[in-house]
Length: 328
Image (cartoon, rainbow, N blue to C red; front, side, top):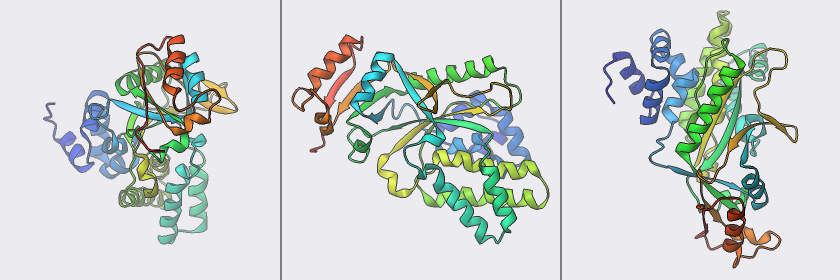
């Protein structure tokens, strides 16, 4: 990768971009990045999705297969339909997913001595994010005690295939909806950050922008500070969950006040979902753990043959099935 532009070099160094972050920037929004960074380097680094994500994007070559844990009963329906429902950020399994970083935000606001009016303003604006975000969660660990809590199977998915599919799907969304009022955001393949020092570093700057914008009636700066936390909540998680080794695909779609406007593909049990694709080509493997025996008609001894038979019935001829190496 040749890079001769001085501003881009500064961005990559000062914002600690990963190699994947550099490549995505160069291929998607180099000019926008230079323009924003030249005018407001701190806002770019700490408050824009491009600047934030650049530090946490993962290299697809280092983990070409990622794993998603789920119950076998759900996986059967996914295999039969070829569809995986990607949930909205407000429907994550862990209610602390969003609360965690907002607790830090309020802690910092109180430390800085803001008024109750300012605190309530931040709370109200936080309830009205500009984007709907959808998250498809994975882990690099296909033999995890912690992740077994999410299900008795771990499906190994082809990362390149998923990014290609989700990117095309998001491109189609912007074209079909004819969106011009909001910036187009790429699909961000993120490695979750569990480092609380980094969390506080980013949160402190974003809160500073919010306070400064509020004091000087600069609505744009104030909203940069508030919106940053919505994106942080997709990337920053508590240290206690580090064992999950989580990776996420973050899909952002703008909320526009139009008649019949929605960002989801389908409503499922009252929840907003984007439809992901599961095929014989991208479902590379299934790892079963000892909880598989809790299913009717499946025992630990016959689990592999039972699942292989089901896969072949549905055209998944090359998906490998194996047992976890964990003792229980």
